[in-house]
Length: 165
Image (cartoon, rainbow, N blue to C red; front, side, top):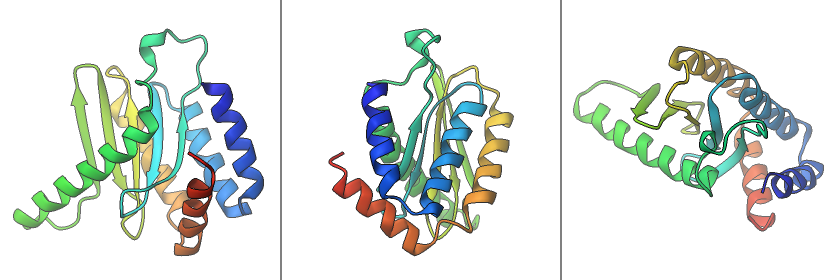
């Protein structure tokens, strides 16, 4: 499965602007650099996946990988968590939600706002260092926030819709 993802990614990368390729590089680098990360997704405010990358660790045991379809599912989960926490924040008059972490028995999910309603979602192993994941998420958001313009989000949507995914 990783090989088909890689070939699709390289085909899509040829159609992407320099800004989109840079954002993809940041995302891939995030997955490669942060221990315990299974998959990462950038999700639009309306719940569409804009970018995604899965940890590719052939030496890792099969139980460290996410379930089949995990990146597509991650976009759905990220959107749902964001909606739920935004509603809770409004109810509690807590202001905007900046970050959400869900620790489960067999993994963790993190959601952080990027800009204009876009979100960064991370699916990680249960034994990940949550503070390291949160730190790297903040670094990604800091680097990507100014790049993820409405025009770039439209470009990424078009690639996903036209890419046959």
